[in-house]
Image 1 (cartoon, one colour):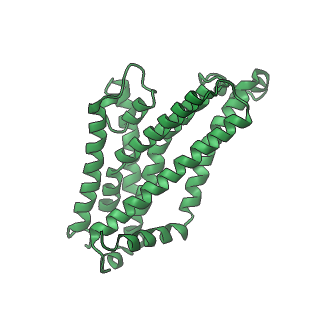
Image 2: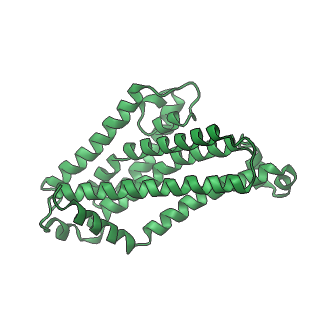
Image 3: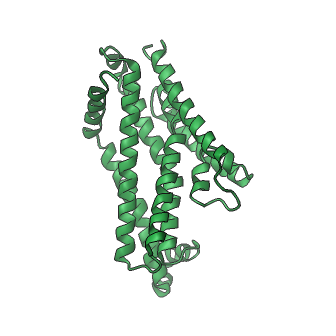
Length: 260
């Protein structure tokens, strides 16, 4: 695609000059450290009791101080926490042009609008991959540092693979956020939409429709929804959602509304 490399470089430059990338990595680091804190507390019940409420909450979390529990926490972070995190990334990448008043200048460049959109999605995808890679590495280091039991090769490989699959599904399911950010011309609408998707995911899971809702399917893939398993229909729902989000974003940017 002509001009894609230059467009990607421009998006990377915008990110480098912002505090958003650093902030996103801080958030992911915090997520990983929370899992480590829970493991640390559960390892010593006496210490948990001395910490009062924090220790009680950790003890009641259903976790045990071993690798399977830590990897379950990783899966939860990848399937639930990433929903809001990826929405934030998409909202910033696609909504900042209108919010900063630079969109009209961007559209005046001799680069196809579809190339601009493709570059933005590429940057978000790579950004999301790096964030999850960092989260996985951090959790592995924490687990090794705490010398948790039950860390066989198959257990770790399966847990890490599950987390990456859940994160990938969340990224695909979050694609409509780009359309909402573009059409909403800012950050507020896409973030509100992201919160709404989290509510929908919770309600759908409670009603037994977790395998048919794109924002709860990652939790199904992570094994967090009892009695529901992944099937081709669930994968198709996520893919259709991603196609609709990307296609809708392309259509909006190529319409007259983008330059209005």
